[in-house]
Amino acid sequence: MKKLSQVRRLAGDYKDLDEYLNLDRKNFIKFNLLALGTFLLNGCNDDFLERKPVDSVTGETFWNTEDNLMVYNNSLYDLARNDDNVPIMQGHYDGFNSHWGSIWNQDEFSDNMAPTNSRHQYFIEVRAGKYHVPDTPADQWFGYKGWDFVRAINVGLENYDKAQVPQEIIDRYAAEARLFRGWFYGEKVEKFGDVPWVDKSLNIDDPDLNIARTPRDEVMKHVLDDLNFACEKLPDDWEDGNAPGRLNRWCALLVKSRICLFEGTWQKYRGGPDVEKWLREAADAAKEVMDKGPYKLYTTGDPQHDYNAYMRILDLSGNPEVMYWRKYKLGVITNAVQSYFIDYSGGATKSLVEDYLCTDGLPVTLSPLYKGDEKIEDIFENRDPRLRQTVLHPDDSEKYRYHLDDGRSYPRITGMAGGAISTTGYHIVKFYNADDMIGHAYNTGESPAITLRFAEVLLNYAEAKAELGGISQQDLDISINLLRDRVAMPHMSLSNIPVDPRYTGDGVSPLIAEIRRERRIELAIEGFRYKDLKRWKLGKKLTVKTLGIQWNKDAEARYAGATIQTSVDQASGKAYIDPYKGVDWDNPVFDEHKHYLWPIPLSVIAKNSKIEQNPGWE
Image (cartoon, rainbow, N blue to C red; front, side):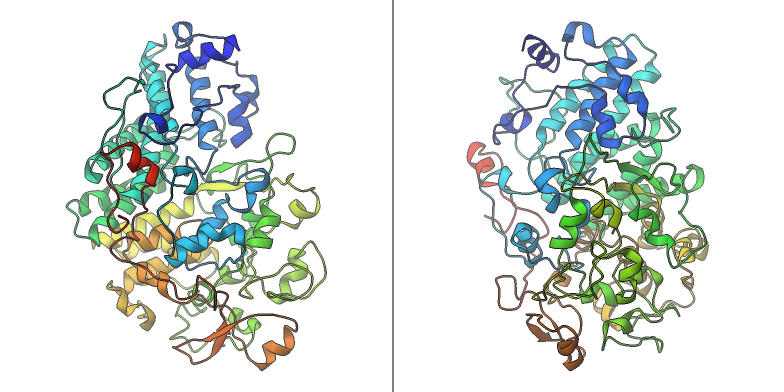
């Protein structure tokens, strides 16, 4: 106990930021900080096992060596593993929370997935626009919390300079911390707009404890400063063979492009003042990774398998596309995400499935190659290979050993006995790994989580250039068309952009609509879709009824025992599975005045009169 109290003094013996921003009290940090902690998260560098513990040092003696700085920053990685409090390096929750904390489940906020299980109600409520102001931060998943993380970062930034090491060494650990801070605040601004900016380690008697929310533009200036510092001072690698044990400069550039693209498009579709600056920063950051970074798309020349092949394995070490990932290892940290995802994810939606192009490069609304959706096999004919590598084709059950190699025919729909059940008829197989389910007992799974991959760099670059109005065919060839080459799809050509009638009402050019489609397809079920719809100011897409496979006489006979409701699609006049018909989530709504930002919990406002509620949530 004495040693633990010494370590707490090392960080200032503080109350955590949640409390001194008048949020709920919680413990700050588990200062059981062996460098093993980072190995548990990222597990790709055995040297982490040899780091020294810090629980026997004091603040007066700690900040001396590079090893001290490294060990302290390991604690930041430890805090960031709590994806609910710090939802920036999203992975998979371990234990009983694997059913909701996974990055794969984040698309349930959007029109890509259709969960119905009660354990996923929060996702369903947000997607349907029928959620309420939470009482406390604890009631809001991935919400207005995690401020202890900022406090820990600021403690480090105030002490790194004490180390008796070259300034270059100090800067790289300060850069690591500032990357975390900029990333954290960028995510909070995405959800809440104005948020309190804190760049010092406040004490319990500090007059700045009860501060108001800092205006969005001011916060984002600080965010950009943090990200720029990180992109300049972080090393290209940490002399560990580019193993994803620590975030490097290339990771920082991708994070910067992601956050700047969000802010640039958010402002563009709302009349913001610095649209060009943010979009230019996004494009330039992505281009630097493309031109100088060590990454490239994973491909073996097999378009029917390459897209999801590396997403279904346990060890991503050495993968040229994966820039950062979280490793799980039996006996260290494990998850149950495979079984939970299959059992509770619900299924992909008709909206997502229909967005995959046909093999002639045209959307289903225009292509003569489209076979329709009278039966599920038809939807895969003459389509982008990424569709069959995302959604289960009935003929692929044996290939994937789906589900638990049970030998049943799929799809299986709500009400059918045995096997895995889908609410829509579209089972998701993009990440499916039978070995991780069959070979491990409950909560001993090792499926990894990809946080940053090179494909996003290419998509960010193409979109930022298009939004700036200066994209060239060469730009497309070094970005979008590399993604299409991997799956042997026709190139996107500026001289022949299709005009999909479903998207002419989105208020953007056909080119931008097609780049957005490419993003949806490439990053499907990876947690991007909901944020993308918000930054594009397209919340209206969340009001479209969620549907599944077509339901006709053949389906009734084929899926005997299914207990489903159906609705008629207005565009086609045909009936489709409607997983939410007759329940609270039927007829989703999206209030343009309030739903682009999340509400501030009631307890936060009650404890600090300077904190104002977001518009529409009063």
